[in-house]
Amino acid sequence: MVNENQFLFHALLMGIFITFVYDVIRICRRVVPHNSFFVSLEDLGFWIYCGGSVFMLMYHESNGELRWFAVFGAIGGMLLYRRLVSPLFVKYVSFVLSKILEGLGKALGWLFHPLRVLLRKTGRGTYRIGRSLRRRLKNKLTYFLKMLKIGLKGK
Image 1 (cartoon, helix red, strand yellow):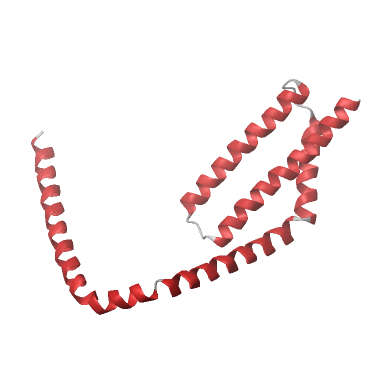
Image 2 (spheres, one colour):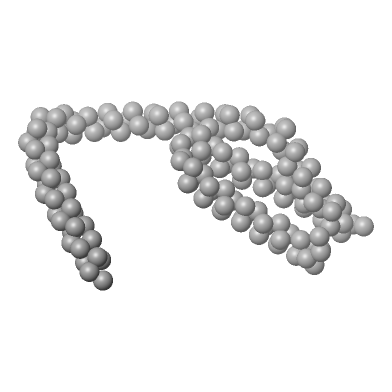
C-alpha cells in the first residue's frame, strides 16, 4: 500500500512537471514568435520527452505495468497545476522576458547607432556594389539551372 501511494504521488508530480515544461515552451512561443514548422518540431520533441518520462516512471515504479491510478494521478497533477499556477506563471514570466528582450534590443540599438550612421553615409556605394553582385549571381544561377535542365533532358 505504501508503494502504491508513493507511486501515485510520483505520478502526480510527473503531471505537474510535464505541464510546467509545456508552460516553458508556451512562454518561449510568446516571447519569440514561431512559425508552424518550429511549433510542430517543439511539440514533437515535447511529446517524445513526455512519453519517455512516463515510460521511465512506469518502468521504475511498477515494473512497466500500466496502473490506472497512476494515469489519473498524472492527469490530476496536470489539472491542479493548470488551474492554480499556469495562468499566472505564463502571463507574468512571458511579460517580464519580453520587457527584458525589449530593453536589450534598445540597448543594442543605442550601441550600434554610430555604425548605422556610418553605413547610411556610405550606403549608396555599397548598395550599388551589392546590386551588381546580386545581378551577376542571379545570372550565374540562371545559367547553371539551364545547363542542369539541358543535362537532365539528354538522359
